[in-house]
Image (cartoon, rainbow, N blue to C red; front, side, top):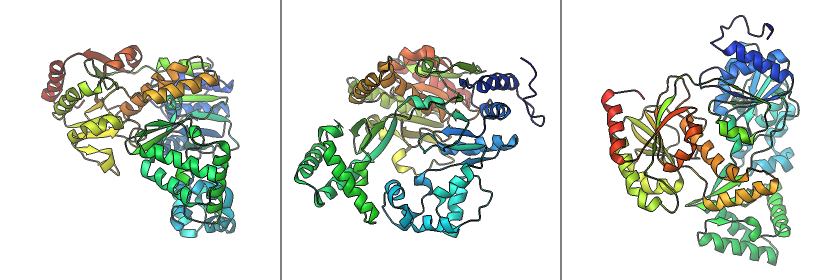
Length: 513
């Protein structure tokens, strides 16, 4: 390839970065969709930004699952003379929710924002400073009494790179799209609502002025939930006429500024599946379609298996120089039909893990309820991760700490292959099949499981120096060994005795794994 003089003179490229930047430049210049697959810490962000700047594909919309990685993207953008902004959604930027307790921000802002004193303050506010993120705007908005959410638009349309999460409304103007941690978009989105919040919403509806037909439908769902049924479909209980009646009632309360819990029910709109797990409902929604050219899918752990589910023109892959050691525990599983007879083995495994200094264990809500007494910390009693910790940190597989945070640890264990529940998989399969996916079975079952696995493992791999021991505690992982071996040197062991030998070996050598 001709010398494009693509690399900034003030930055010394690492091995392979210049070559990758040139390949990426050539592809995005021709509006191609590309996967950039390179190890954590290799410099994917900088290389991507350099290629897009050289190709003239500005502004860039950079999508992330968690805004916590936005600062890293901004740092690299500034190195090559690009100005950027981290945009937050209403949940992170609205000041009125603190001013008016328990209001549904989305609906109020959409239909009644001209009553919001902060939005009115924005129209009076005409002096903007050089800010880089929604956090800075929120701070200024509090001081000068204006709306941070809409104030962001000023910066968004003056930025070379706009960083926001997958779900925020996209800006009207951008030339190129980058999807960071791209494996995440293959799995459906999950939203959790507590059972008590939904019960409050239904009881409020019964106290409201509803038609007789609507009241009966609310009563039938309330009875169903009280019986602690696990899986259900909104449209088994409500017809469209009733749903429209409830939404009209809700909007009337929002516009009048009346406190209401009905919003918890409204959140069920648009979901394809809702299921109960202990004290929470999980709502399943499909990710948005990211059709745009050029698009760069950036990932440190994009399995070869995943390429079957994205329409891309090319892949640029940088091999991992050194793989982590990992073990598949081949004698245990959390499968629904087999968990009961395996739970004592899992408790023995957790007891052995206490020999190590710091161990992060990810498991489903169902499994956590059976082993939480073996943990030093659990997600339910943590607001933030402690900086210095020892013992076993037990977190939810798809919980708030499963993505977007760094957890320094000696070992990471996935306690059970993190499949969605059988009823959810079945419903997802039907949805994907109706949409027209030929690989609907894999998209509904295997892909969400593997994405969740990579999310959890990735929490301990945020720097090249991190070398935790990886433990996949379920024999079902073995079916995907050839794909996971792209990033892990995986070995299967089939007894607690062999597992104990491995733990003692790491312990005796005092390896910072």
